[in-house]
Length: 259
Image (tube, rainbow, N blue to C red; front, side):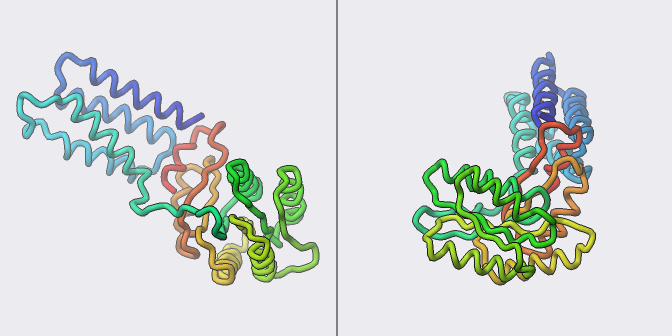
């Protein structure tokens, strides 16, 4: 797993710095350079790496540190905090409540399987989830969701004849609200060549169903392109969470951090 390898490289860099007889500017630079190389090699966005590097250098100012300070500890904490900041959305995440209906809309690519996994995860914890297939663009989308949902024993809604995804989404949500489902998961059309039409469709589905949370599903193997893709989706609908797929077999998985 690429992020596990990335974490291992960062850990080794910090350990080597900690084992140094004297911790000075040279040791800090060597540690940061190795971490920078590991991040860039995993295709983490250059701007994120640069900002992390500059912030650590600003925090760890050897001229301002008194003789009694534990420099190793200060450097370790600074690096840890900056790595956490890369992933910190700085806003509280949406938390569904049991006994109350929440609508979760999925956008992006590779969503159908992820929707089922999300529903199954909550079902095992005692929730009452349901799936709505509002993807009328991809052939076989409803069949795939139906097959997954049936296997997981999760209620589902879709149509072989209706071509309007907004109408399907609204009818599905209304159906499961009446059935007191706690998590209504709406699967929308994925990315395709008609991007403007896709984003407009997502916006219409979002306005019609008024989801409590919109989840952006992304393929980690696209590397730094994750930033532009995530930005495009967020500019169309108010994305509130990200799920990253295919993290276990690609060298560019670090690009997922850009999202």
